[in-house]
Structures are given as C-alpha cells and as structure tokens.
Length: 188
Image (tube, rainbow, N blue to C red):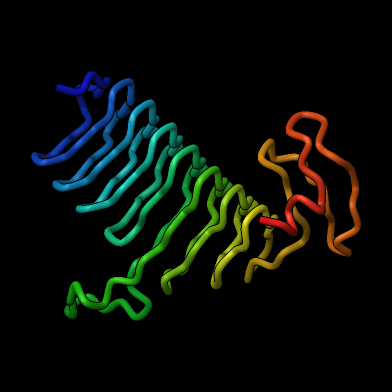
C-alpha cells in the first residue's frame, strides 16, 4: 500500500493509484481511475478528473482542475489557477466522451499562474515554460518560453528555467547550472 499524505478534507475515490510521498492538500478531489506518481504535491482545492495520469515529482499549485484527457509527465510544475480544457465546443446538455481532446504536458514543463491550455490534442514540450496568464492555443516546442494571448514564443529556456535565447534566437548565455546552450536546444 502506498504511503502518501491526504488532508482530512480531501476526497480520494476508489481505484486511484497514488505514489509514495505524495501530498494531497485541503479540499482536493481525486476521481476514480486517476494515477498520481510518487513525490507529488497537489495544492489546496485541486481537482483531478477520472483517468488523469500524473507522473513523479509533479507540483500542482492551488485551485487547478486537471480534466480527463490530460497527462502530465514527470517533474512538471503547474501554477496556481492554471486551466486545462478538454472540449473545444462545450455545451451544457451535450456530453460525449468522444469529444474529449487530449493535452500532454511533457517532462519538466512549467505552466505559470492562471495560464489557460485550450485543448486540441495540445502538447507542451519538454522543459517548456508558459508565462503567467498566457492562453496556449497550439503546441509548444521543447524548451520554448511562451507568453501572451494567444501565447507566442519569445525565447527559450534551459532545464533550470534560465533564459538562454530571446526573441531573435541570439545566444544570450550558456547556463552555468546545466550547461545548456542554443546549439544544444537545436539538437533536441
């Protein structure tokens, strides 16, 4: 049996898999069939829908809803109030599981506070960074830094989150922490 922490106000439905050392905080709700990796943190008032898959070492801040069709890979960060959608044309009285569009948040990606991911089989690339309040309407490449509504690429960041290329794709620096350069990004 997994050893995780669940706040007394959190709800975890049956048939969920929750990894060791994961924390699920106040008023959170994890639906049936969800899979959450080890060493994750689900902030206050987080909602994890049915069949959602979350990798290891993922941090989901307060007031985030992760809907059916969303997969979050290892080491990702989801900022407070971030929004995932899963139906391009939602209607109150029309529901069909076939309408669900997927979103994949790849390894190490970071999504800023109050950013919105508009589903359409969306992929947020490895170590990409989404600025706070951005509205993402199309795929984001690995290491890309995107901001705005709609979100546009304004540069590239390394695994540490340091900006190494900005707008003109001119090398700003080599990251002293991880050694990544513009050339390394182009090869990935």
